[in-house]
Each structure stands twice: as structure tokens, then as C-alpha cells.
Length: 154
Image (cartoon, rainbow, N blue to C red; front, side, top):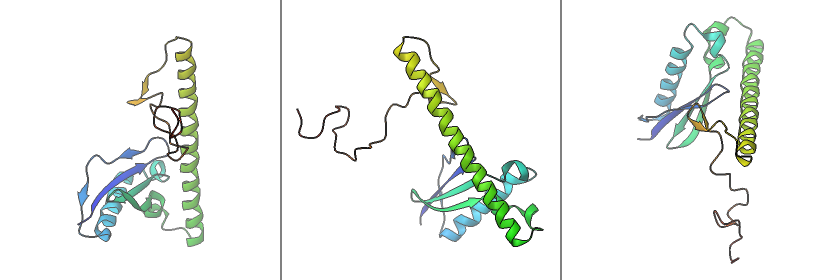
């Protein structure tokens, strides 16, 4: 039986599932995801319509469940209009994700400048370090970690 985890994407900070669930098959996991979305949205459709629940099977994302797709308050709309509304909420979430990433970059830049000048800086926000402790490996493994030198260099 595959192990399933879930991540809530609201456009600001992803909320990762701390526990995993075993389901006999993907259809049951998706049913569970739809039930979770229904429960989270109940009475707050307008505020949560741009959210998305990602479903992971053994650590690999297998499905994205946009809340707008499940939102029953949109059932009265013509199918073409409903599709346009769903797309607009996806776009809104993507925009919020980009703005959140930009704010994070500005916050980190300010912290790095303050640190370089020996000034106090914001160390964490929402439990996350302001300054990343590791950068993505953009050189695809051609450098030895932590040395700044290419493999084979002394």
C-alpha cells in the first residue's frame, strides 16, 4: 500500500502534512483529499477558493486539488465561466506565491546586509530562518560541497 502525504498551498506559506496515511489505492487518497478540501472550505469558500491541496504518493506529487474545482457554491455557473473563475483563482495563488518569494528574498537580503555590517537582524520568521543555510546546487554537482572548488582542484 502506498504512503500518502498532503500539502496545503495558500500562496503564502505551504503547510506540509506532518503525518502520512496509508491508502489501498490512489482513488481513496483522492477521496480523502476532496473531503479535506470540503472541510477546510466549509463556510469560507470565498477566502479559500484560491488554495490548493497537493497529494503526494511515496514522496512524489501525483495530484493537485484546487479548492475552486471542488467549490459547490460555483455550481450554478455556466461551465465555461466556471473554468474561467477556476483559472483566475489559480492565477491569484501563483501571484501570491511570487509575491511571497519576493518578500522572502528582500527580508533575506536585508538580513545579510545587516549581518555584514555587524547590525542586528531578524533571525527567523514563522519559525523559518531568515538567512538560508544552504543554496541550491546550481552547478549540478561539479563543485565539492562547502569548498567553492571544482572536483579535482586542490
